[in-house]
Image (tube, rainbow, N blue to C red; front, side):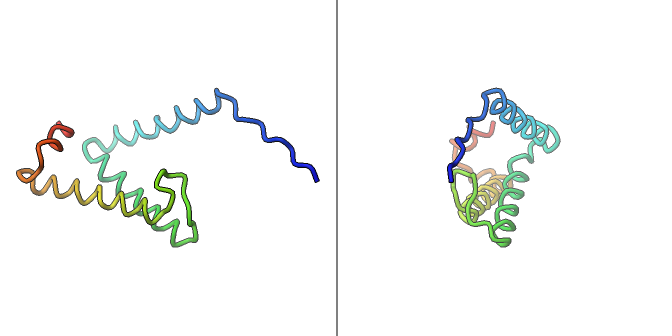
Length: 99
């Protein structure tokens, strides 16, 4: 049995997929406004958890494992909520990032 060589994806297809990904991000940001980060973090965590419960043990995410990725996004969400609830306790470097 001989395996056929897999052709590399043409650059225009890669760029088209990248453009579409950023289009989705921009549309979501436009609709969600200042709540983009917490909503995206929540949805990411939930989808990673559901996919893990359905048997998915890896992901394309840099964090590689669904439970690790879900944990990271839950932490981001919790920190965002704490910043909103207790704005006086926020370190100056975080205030700089968000203003």
